Length: 338
Image (cartoon, rainbow, N blue to C red; front, side, top):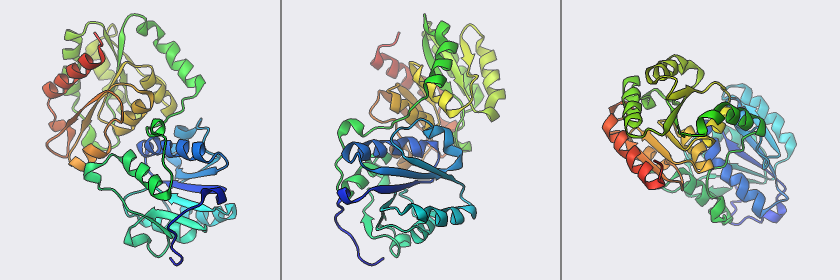
């Protein structure tokens, strides 16, 4: 694209489109950028283009003026053409993987400034190029914060963290459900679901881990979290522990899922969406990861008490129960939970 830009005057920008066509975790970690932009430039109108499957994630986010939902299919093309009537001053795409979809967006969307990572796919269509940090030694939030820095925006450190806005209705419903348990017990949220098959830990391992924790920490009570397709496994795990030691999550929206995590003392999970929601609320987290190492580095819990276990292979099933239990004990000792 001609007329490359090296410096941006945000006082001349009124309306921004941020593109984040990723999963739930991608949105939660990106949420800090909305906070930073609105703090620095309260006049900005921030629009977000994201996937239709993310609707409930942003239901209560006050920083966004408008959210446009779409699927990654031919209908996106028509949606993009229609969005040009918004007359955006600037388009930002935080995706640090060169993407055909992002290329299409940069090509079709009209804006005075188009900012994206300096990938060859985009060079004909963007006029502000951002140099990406290396994935193998930087967290995803650090990479996006560096993106903002290259735009000329220095973020307040207290804002460089995930954010998640939970509805008061959903939080009240969850707290009502759990109030009798939390009176006398430390609630340990155990999320058995994940966004990819390689992130699923065997049910036998979950069962053994929770039995070990139960034997050593008598004051713990388990909250078993799972998406709808994993409810059979959820019920099996709850049944093996008994109703006096655990409860199954009953409310299914992502808002309720976040409220469950917020209401817990500790989270154990192989899923990074849950990791970032916990980071938003400051909930200590024990997370399980597959290889490769860049994934382990990129999607860690951020600025909270945590322990992480990385598999020696591209499947979390190869993580041993004893290794996870050892990390759990270490985390419990750090936060002083007895």
